[in-house]
Image (cartoon, rainbow, N blue to C red; front, side, top):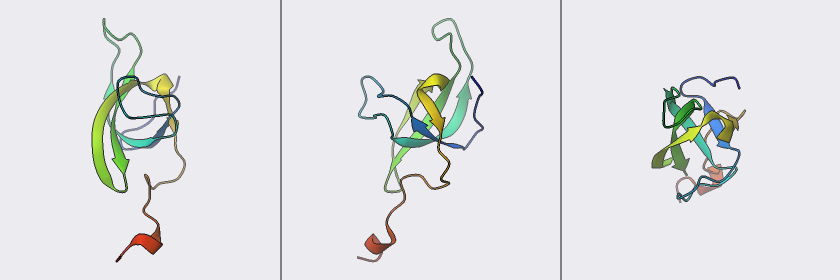
Length: 83
């Protein structure tokens, strides 16, 4: 599987066990993780957002995320600004 680039936006392709993150949630790659003896698949450290606020940073295998083509991560609707 092709590795995405640092700071690229990704969308989870499945739920992440033991977290509140689910398929379709979006994050940004903050680190690329090499395979090791405990995790044979390369991975990403993702900063997960909601309404522009960081919720958590999670590690997932690369097969659990796919590129998100929109450059914004969980954008705030313009109608909600200045309210």
